[in-house]
Image (cartoon, rainbow, N blue to C red; front, top):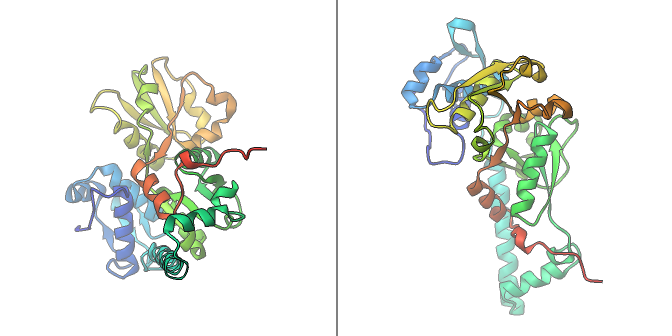
Length: 323
């Protein structure tokens, strides 16, 4: 299986793999009934971890594009509804904004002799401008309130924005304006709100690199999730933080996350992904053996996002107006 994977890209490999297969299905390169390579075979051919392939196949299965049939393999169910590159509309919208700004700058210089910095100060001083104390509003889409709040706090710490959580568990359309989401929910979000593509900005995330310090006392770790695929994905994420063989990490499946804490030994810690963590409740979150696996936006992507949307750094955030 020959598929283009960019190992230097900030986009996770599993997502690149899923999107490459999605494209082949949508364009007819993979016909209905075609059998995808076995996980081990695909991992060997692509030189990636088996968890990467398993996670990509799971994403396609969630979209109803493939079906895993026990020991027989994974089979294509049908073509995707939209074969167009998912980011094309968003890219066009960004280009239009850039052309608009360039036109305003050119007119400001040619007609009024204003330097770009002077124009910026005038815009900021207008009602609703950056200098009036109003911050640009951006909504952060995630699968749980906890994860939404974490990523919103990251955005607000880096950029002068009013970042507001918006959980995917809610009903209806997200509020107007820019929407920031992670690639983990890329397919689900585009399926639910295809008309919002020009507002959507996806960012890659990874496990908080500080997590090993909070797990250092454990002789054994359990990656606790509500189904097998999620548990194995979490297991792979946690294992990647440690040298090979340093700490054993096992997948534990518990449809009710709190059940994973039953009978856990004193030298073992249970690691919960954000969605499962939010289902524990406050009492079990305080359990001495429970730990939240926090995911963070990759720094380069967070920097690129703010520059692309024209945000000011958080250090430039306007303070309270003097009375």
